[in-house]
Image (cartoon, rainbow, N blue to C red):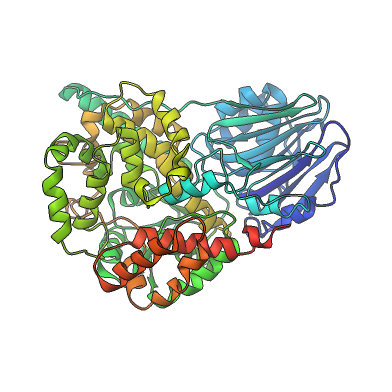
Length: 620
């Protein structure tokens, strides 16, 4: 795992003076090594977190001829098999790392033929010195980030693993994109290819960039599968169960490849328990697990996780997270976040990763992506209830007026309010509102002009899909890709930790998309087929434990001991949200009249970003 950066121009040799500064802005991503290589028309730079071949494998690295150079952030899990193929063609390797395998594969096949052969998570740059072509590519699920821009004055192309690295370039402008702010408030994240700043883009998952003398071309090398509808019979059900189980096992075991110890993030939920149950017997030592324990009971999963850890004889680390820790985490986020990310579970993830790093672990496995692949969210069932909900909409509105708010995790009143808010929207927009922070009516009408463009475009390619299949595809692309995975990457890499999830294996993702939706969603049950599969590897008493979801108790904390964090919030977020609205939400939240945790937390993160080192106030 690494941070990569580069500066190129194929018209005149560019100024490479800022290259090392871009690289070292990402020292947290790669604390083990720093190296840059300069060419006449550009340069590549890498900060390295050494996991494969820690003593060798310095990047950027060339093929044996010196024609191709590669800088990669990520892991290629099947690199040993690919190494054998290259050796059969006569390649002699100098290291044991996966990046050298990649560059030799590119030299033999070309990048576009090599990419489909890769099993892993990655963002990479390939420079062809002979043809003077630079390629950038991002993995299928978007686990590893990649930002890029072209400086308009002299057409210099700059890219990096993090936005903050680009902002280190002395000629980078910080012009806030109002459309990105609107998307952030509505979704809690900014969908690719947009970023918070005009002129800077995120490469979308499964896409690649080609830069040569003709300019920049962007295309895709992998297309996400569309979830399948239907409900097959018993024989096909058994076949799907066997296929899914085998694919998950292969994906989980492939993620154990590492020259450093591997731990497990354990929530006690179905997915992380399945990961532990699958990899545990194949680990050389007892598995070390990490579980966060927020002080609010409805958010605390440590009891269930302790049961799971004891059953599988794990070394279990339970990590307390108190309300008095939140201001400290928020200050660190202010100094690290280079664009707003409003997921309220980010502080919990941040605190957890800090402790994982302190325990000496560089690699941990997680259950990220299981809900999107296998139908794990209650919203998928809620889409089926929309016709009934529309009929009873007036009664729901009346109930919401008298229903007292709860600050618990995923409370009933919160779910009812969200469902009511999205009843009369098209299914794809409804899903985004259910999963997001603000409601469309919270925003000024001028901010909504094109706020739905990426979501509408994605949904238009899925005409005819059922609402629940549409929702699973949307969540995989946007909520997972631009929200959850961005959160995990920023929090883990800030502490020099790599997170791997078997559920994000592209083979498992493609297979699970072909599983008919009727096998994933029962009448009143999410993840139906996955629960049947895991019953063979997880004890029944553990499988029956209620799903809580990973989060931070920002609702009760902002109402109680952390109220001071909201001081002057209304002034800090103007002109993006009116001061009257913010004052009203603060007053209602603190008095217990309404639960505005998601609005207030998203605004708090925005305020801290605006005044932080990567916000517009500190730009040129």
